[in-house]
Length: 227
Image 1 (cartoon, rainbow, N blue to C red):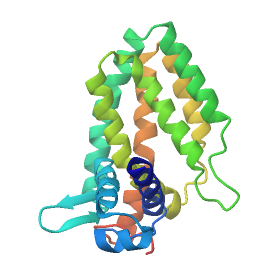
Image 2: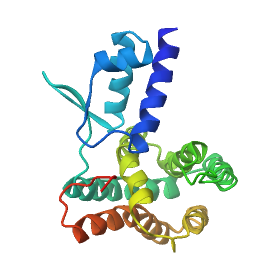
Image 3: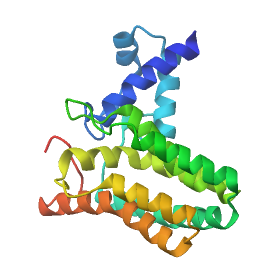
């Protein structure tokens, strides 16, 4: 039962974080959250631990857990690292992936493409967010290196908050993200590593570049979704 309760609390807090309900750097107090959810402190701590593992929150010795700060430097560093890691993983997937890998990529892409990315209220469809993560994971799964896959997955989790803020703050309406995914899928299955990596890099860099531009236009070193 404790595990189930932890999942419930974690899911609510994660959704609220991604929607900007908490300010960057805001403390997530165990006692207050326990009272709010009617849950034990151990349940709250486990949920907060999962948030820190995803890079959505930060645990500090003697100071507890707080919402992650959103800084331009961190956006740039995270993006640079994602490009490095995912580019290599995709190259290895294209070189090493078998028929099962191709089938998994096709299936993941089909599920993502058939899932609406936004709801009627213009908020992100969480089902699409899951499918999106599954598609990118499937692309890299042929690399035959579980440790590299794990690093890539962790970096994608860390970038999720920035990606949500990109949708909220920037005006990038000309972007056809579905076309980007189709192109990426087609090039990967055609075993065109150089072209696939080029598209992947552009795909990864677009949101953070827009977010950094937004911040710099306003003279900000850190981002605030309610600015």
